[in-house]
Image (tube, rainbow, N blue to C red; front, top):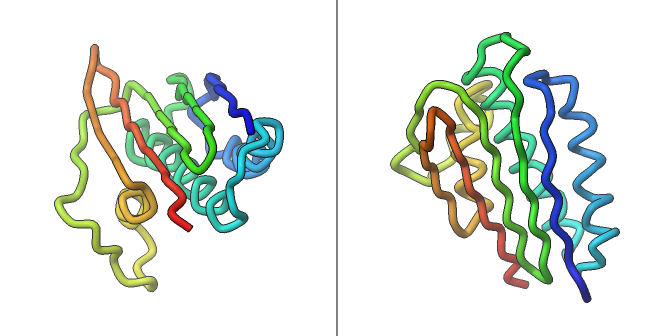
Length: 137
């Protein structure tokens, strides 16, 4: 078992979401870490939701800012960081996911539901969302 670390930036554009959906499972295979299919799916969803929030809520259609991501993959543990220069925001006070029929406002709740630790910092006009997924089974 090894692991891996990736750091990259994407333009503030939803067209990169499809790429992220395929990149994360490929990174898990390259890192050769024991992460279940369910864990891989949950981490992919967390990463996609974090990027969606940055694009849709942070920049509202402005494609000029870049979103920086760092992934650290270890056996049974994945650390994901998404950094973007959007306006400040807060994490919701509860981990309860809104009803499934609700069409927006669920991303941060899903992130908090699937990750053991979620931390939001603001440094030099950058939102830094740090998410740690730990596989328990």
